[in-house]
Image (cartoon, rainbow, N blue to C red):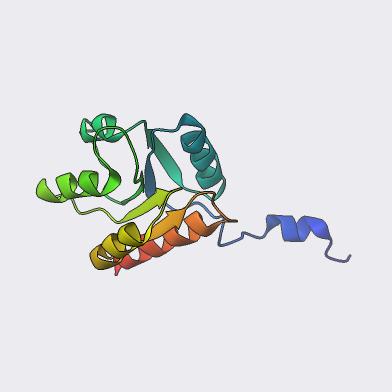
Length: 141
């Protein structure tokens, strides 16, 4: 009997396999972006928690041990970098990626100096899943 399509369907794709205990924390004031990211990241195998902005996120008392932040830069109140600074002040060290639809040279420079990856909207292909996997890998190393 030859191996048909069914055999390939049973093989696990390492890019979509579940990532045990790794939680992506999405903080974005745009409900459409939050929903889209949640869906896409869950399809990629991540557990996802979403927050409508910095205020909601800063009230979170139970941050997962293995997590990665996906933070919109431009939000009402404080921006993404200010949120990350507040977390550092609290002693919270979580890998972070900043997302925005309005990147300029100053923002790119600020993020580069801080060593924080930037992903620009609209998102292309699966660039966010690749960057998130890299963030988890660097945090583990």
